Amino acid sequence: MKIFALQSLVGGFLDEDLKNFNKVFDDWCVQFESMEDAQLILDSLDKDEQIKIVEITPLSYPKYFFPKLQGIIHATREYEGKIICIVEPQMGMSFRIAICDLQTKKVRVLATRYKSALNAEGAFANLAFDL
Image 1 (cartoon, rainbow, N blue to C red):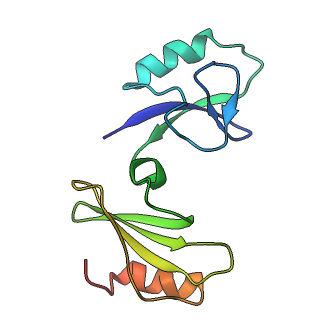
Image 2: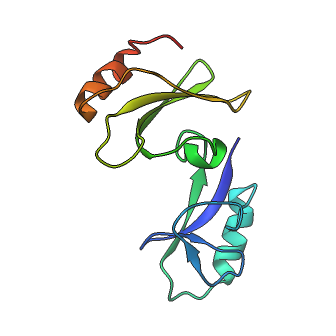
């Protein structure tokens, strides 16, 4: 499940108008099924822009594949067909662990709250919770 996109080195993904950049990768951004297709479009663009080809996967950009996933994603990991994320629902709130199922597209946020990213990373690294 790979998608390729064009991203400005300053930030933002190339919009379908091939001129503007969106801060968030969404359905309005130019998407390619292969690196070669992305390279063809990149070669045709103005060389003044600093643009690179990036691969969008559930692990690298989980919010695109799981729209119900809300908040700031601090880390992701793939385990047994699931994407596990450390999420800060809103800035300043307790950290949570979200489990995103690749097959069903469901997101489950665990009830445990972590006061710091370090505490959440400990549980995250050791998979100290039930999937």
